[in-house]
Image (tube, rainbow, N blue to C red; front, side, top):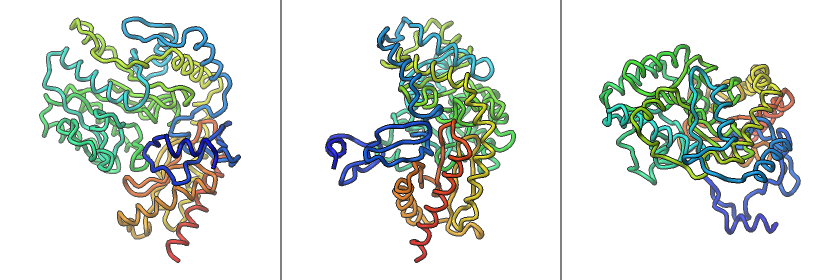
Length: 437
């Protein structure tokens, strides 16, 4: 075993994972859509790391942007002062964002972004003289982060239960968009809680957990109208969906809505540095400012100069190389490749859009028979290592129905799509043969 693998086994906490007895695989380098481990094995990065990589691995221009900024000024906080990378990046993001969204609060990552959006919503209503507005509505099965505030909005029991009660009394969860009454359920929840107590509704443009649930026609317009009717902030959680993942810069441009806040992270830097944030519409900042209040919230590394410089280089490269347009032009080809897997005996449904898809697995799709919970857990446990063994990083997940989920770099094209489909089918074949033997 290599020294690095031994060190990882003995000293490194892995996230959401057990440490294998012989240590974890050590990833060593990346280029384009591919990664190589310390043994030289190549993997297709069909998950973009963790829904992160937009522009691909191995970009020297982004590395150079980080180096140049670190040499100039490695660190200074945006606590009462500013610096050029943060100001320029906030301006660029405001230009790309939908509608009149014009101000950015920077943090280090997605969980902090969701946590910050809730706190900004709370301070907004305090400034308005509505201190009773504290409650938040989210969707079932949804994942919004792991810090205690964000985890309260998350609705996946195994992730929540060890840390409860948290802020559970302030959060309510309604159906995913596979329910044609999902929007109506939001209004029913608001009325049941008391509209004067609800601060915000947190929703993803395409819901990640459970397998890429897309909104039905008119869903977002209905939710926007409901939030406006009761004076509630609409938060679009785009930690995954922003910066081209859906074939548009933001979810509002895909589904024609303007939220009050957008949370983002991941694709903002394509993973070359940690960065996240909250984008807000003018009335939020203006209300807090007019009340003469400070924003009682801050993150040490929020707006880090190096991260902001990397994000600027990433977004400028994405614009000049038309990366988002590439994703929009190729999304149907990606879908078509994955549809070729649907004739497998357990492949029941393909959901998603852009470069963000999931295949739901069922025991008998023709009769609509789902795997029992224990069976789904076993199926996912077999698929996870098999996909890696076959040279592809994708997500086999069972937090709802069992799925295989994909989020490749936005530079991926037909060759990568075909490889994703081929490995997926072969993995399902092997698991199903073992299952039915």
